[in-house]
View 1 (cartoon, rainbow, N blue to C red):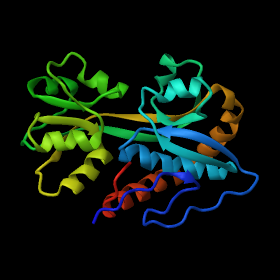
View 2 (view 1 turned 45 degrees about the horizontal axis):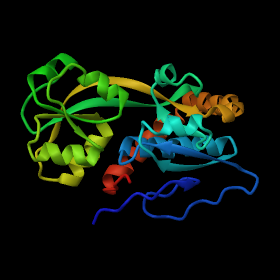
View 3 (view 1 turned 120 degrees about the vertical axis):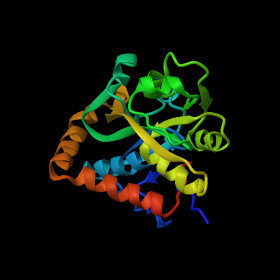
View 4 (view 1 turned 180 degrees about the vertical axis):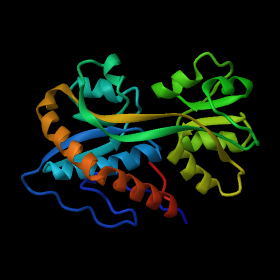
Length: 245
């Protein structure tokens, strides 16, 4: 039976359903958002929880649609977004990007057909499905005719399994989780489209935390801790058959 991943609240939640680790009484807690039903974003959330722990901070992380999250942050109702691309700040310059990047993703093409995809141009030959509201995905499928849109990764791969289109475009870990979930679907990765770093963003009223978080991320990058955390959380997520809420 598949287990549902728990909503991240306070310190990191053990994958197998362990208790939430209590935050120190004096820890400052921030309310952050991540994309719903995205394994990639849930894993990034766990990594970021470790960064926050290093800084003596706590984070309550909840799923919000990617188009709504920056609006909530700019209105002061949200303290930040777990992970977005570098250019997210081009669209929302008042948001505070924490550098360096703390995570990355690999955008991948998935299909039931025996094909090979090496670039965006290769997508033109096929019927393509993609998640709505994600800028990097929008860029990859821009100009393609008849792109089918899904609300999240789970819906996207169910549509692919039902032959609604030939190729689904999504992050590698999201695809791996859905392939594990769908078992005998015949879906497999057929090509890498791009790899990109992602950054944590703070709402303007939390800008004073930028330097502290940047220092922690830099230290964890140099030590290799961020990469070890990503490998560990990704492997556990797939092996336990968890679902992103």
